[in-house]
Image (tube, rainbow, N blue to C red; front, side, top):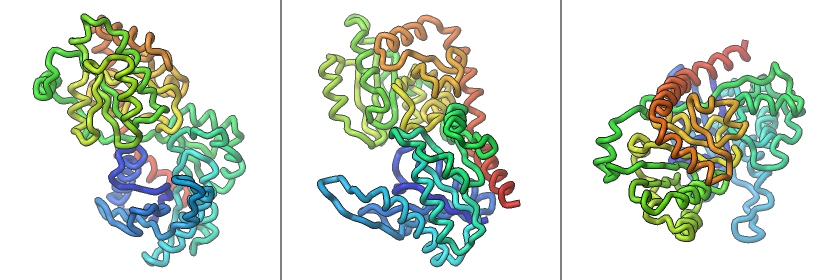
Length: 389
């Protein structure tokens, strides 16, 4: 079947979970015999059309309303996000000589479901079926505005977690419309390696290594980890190392200032994004992801699952968005959100309870094996087949 994936300005090399998971899903579906075209709006430095791994077409035929009231602000950008995709579907059908069977849109905001609704109106195939995936929880107040109304135009709405499922139900979306399909990770890439050999190779032998990786944005809670490190006593600091590895999105200067203010530069180090992240996860004793909330982050964060798959324990936040998905003290450790004291207390608890730590690591590893791309692609394929019957 012919599938159109509608996504915001798509950069194939962006180190972001949504980009990585969409490309891997498209690739797996192509292996199953489908044709997948990713349709996006075009930003200044992006080409109109490119073909990436496994014959995935990324098509960006339109860019509208390039109006700036001041640097970086375009008051008509929302319309660009809708029209560029909707018209892009019709343009793709003409360029590639196909009719789409399914238009599958992806976003955090319900308002962006409009792009698929309008795309169907413009499509040559008036019987084209609509599906929408909420990859994360929107950071905006009106993130689920009118979702119950928009849902009537879609055959299925895919969410990644029970928490999201319950949110949509509270907003009036019918149960039969919603299906949970968790996000996936690359289990061939993220796997256990020899920790001591890697520590020796990178110069961290004898240290208890903490690691955060992901975007350098306020939504990730990095400052709470830095402040937690300031609570380590001076005589213990030589035995700790906290590595902060960015994705390339967000500014490092702000966090460098916090490191200096908290006087923890001998403990906390910001690492360049272009590293072998699998090796860094494996050499770490604990991955710390202190999310204050789970907005603008995948509903089942890839960083958590990837770390579990590498048999590195994870410390994250005790928030309902995560605790309905994970099992605290069984496959993950949790600290109170926005609380450096709770973070450092839990770090010390993990160090002092090796048997519990090993039990959590093994349970987490088994849990992570349910999130392979093959499983996710089959679930999507089954949904596509079902709705076209």
